[in-house]
Amino acid sequence: MAFHGSQAIVNVMTTHCYETTGLDGAYKAAAENWYLRNIGFLDLADRVIARLGGGAEGQQINAETYGGSQIMSAYNQAENKNSFCRAFLEQVETGALDIDRQLPAPLKRAQEISAS
Image (cartoon, rainbow, N blue to C red):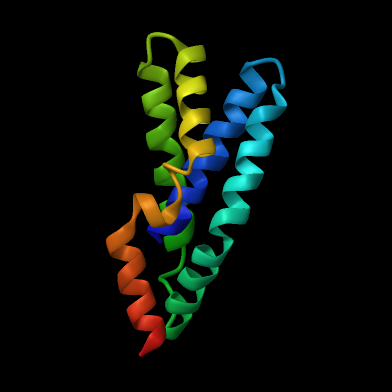
């Protein structure tokens, strides 16, 4: 579920920053590129969840809601919203928020479960 939470963080913040910065297309492109780099990990998560009997009802939605609310809370606390968005964009573009870099231990565990 953490992988889907990460996706929600990227989606929520890139969409919010896109809308609040005058529709700067760099945010949309960054979100699309993040998805392309991470789709395999998201697919792996879904396969592992299914292999383990599926998640509890609403578990994925809860993970996504939690991830989105956490990043919005950080945004709301930032003194300079534009700087926050620019720093977030840079993290997405450089891959710092990619699943393999952000969640290496859960990724390794998911790969082990998938391989067994």
